[in-house]
Image 1 (tube, rainbow, N blue to C red):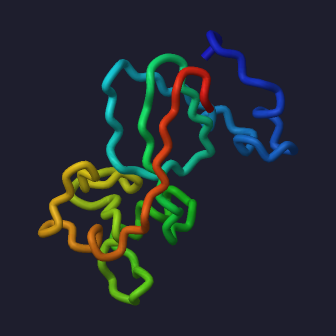
Image 2 (cartoon, rainbow, N blue to C red; image 1 turned 180 degrees about the vertical axis):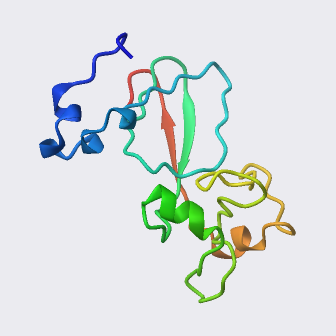
Image 3 (cartoon, rainbow, N blue to C red; image 1 turned 45 degrees about the vertical axis):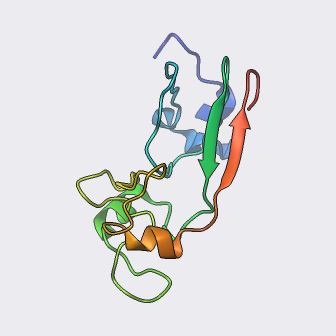
Length: 133
């Protein structure tokens, strides 16, 4: 933890950044050709591309509470049609973490995941290059 200093404004809850909690500061790094599964992040993020290019698909937010523990305990929650089925992204199903989907968005199985075909909003596609954030 001492390799990367935490900025003062991240430690101070008055600034409302990272809620003043050290564990809210994360650094994710990946090698070439890294693919992340469809997921949502319960914490704020800043994505920076240092070298190479990255394709990112961003979906509009779903109706989750933003509270990791509450969302994890809900599992299958009511969607906008009032049914108690997984939402379009199926996060937290098939043994995945509450924020990670079993759907392969590059090759979705619409038989296993029909809500992905029927309910998923159109994503925004972003191509990040060196120096983009």
